[in-house]
Structures are given as structure tokens and as C-alpha cells.
Image (cartoon, rainbow over the protein chains, first blue to last red):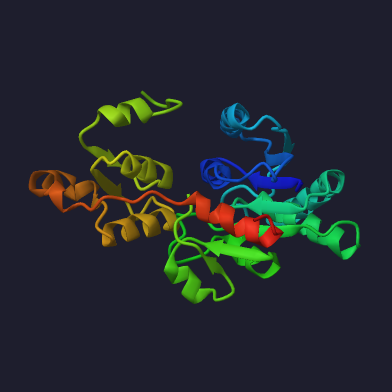
Length: 177
Length: 104
């Protein structure tokens, strides 16, 4: 059984739920993490899990909110501060959940979560596998989260061939959402 | 209306959709098999919205125009040139993860 972690917000939520749609029950319990300013994601997750529980009896999931690490167009220096704060905030959460897998798809919120997981791995507490799936919107360039996590993730998945060429360490499976 | 929880019903009844280049809007429309005209405004849009719209246009799935050429596009469009949009395959992702974790 693999404890799973997801970090996302907003429009990314639809994408990540599609990614999860074919996963077997081995990927349970599922822990969803999203930005505390996001209202619609919670409803979407509940609806997804509700549908899932109609097929699978053993559906366990939790929801956790963390502060957004960076607002759109926030300045560089203040982003560093807010991201550090988010890392500190997500450390106890990641420690508590001790995931085997962290799956994220783009929003800035996922970077501190992944970094806190990497720290836990370095300290020998829990080594999580980080899988990053770049959004389908990204055809030719990576998002900022993508550029950062390209170097820190175990598997970096892109959905368009141009990106596979530019980022050779990435995995290309075609369109998966 | 300003914001609805879901446009799915309206989408099903529509014959033609004119939309901005948001990924959700484009993908949902294409998956319903409806013809789509994407209106782009390079001054306002984020880069990444433009990337997807351009790619979809290159692949022949949507018509593209901007605000000033919309009327002209509507007058001269030939929707039969639009190619159907195959759905994404999340099962490939599931298979990939299963291999990573040794579930097979």
C-alpha cells in the first residue's frame, strides 16, 4: 500500500484528478494538499472521491491546506520569504503523512512540499518518490515549478514532444489528461 | 451569467463554441466534439495559454483569431476542416506508475 500525496490548486485540480482516474486501489490512502485560498478544489476532490468509492470499497483520503507559497506575479525577494515559510509549514505535515509517492502538476504550492520531502529523505526519515507531471498547457516551455522540479523530481513527465526534446531527462507518455 | 459551476450542459447543447484560450475551456469543448474558435489577445494573455492555443491550431483542432478578426473568421469559416480531438490517456500514466512501484 502506498500513501500518496498530491499538491495542486485551481485549474490544476481538474488535471490531477484526471491523472488519478485510472489508478488502482494500491494508491491509498490519498492525501490531497492544496492552497488555503482555493475553494473550488475541495468540492472537486470530494466529488471525485465520492465517485471512486462507488467502485472501490476501501477509499481513504484526507485534505490538508497550506499557505500559498507565491501569488501570481509576486516579486522575487518576497517569493523567497513566502516559499521558505511554506517549506517550514509543510515539513511537519510531510513528516506526519510520510508519503511513499508525491504527485504534483505545477502550482507553486507543490515546490515547498517536495522540498520538505527531499529534506526528510536526506535526514533518513522517509524517502518519497517525487513524480511531477507538467500541465498540458505547457507545450514549448516549462512552468517555473517545472524548471525547479526538473532537477529534484524522480520522474518528470511532459505531455508534448517539444518538451521531451528540450528536457531529455523527462518522460513522454503522450497526452495523459 | 458570470460564473457557473459547470458549463457541461450548455456545452452539450451548443453547435459552436467561441472561447478564450484557457486550457480547461479548450479541452472540455474539444472533448465534447464541438467546433471551437479560440480568441486570443496577446496583450492580456499569459504565455502558456497562447502555447496551447497555437498547438491546437497547428494540429487542426481549433480555429484561431483575435478580437478584431472574429467577425471575419465567423463569416469565412469552414468547420469541416477541423480535426477530431482524441481524448487523453490517463491509463498510460497509471501503467507507468505501476511499473515504478512494481505493481503489475
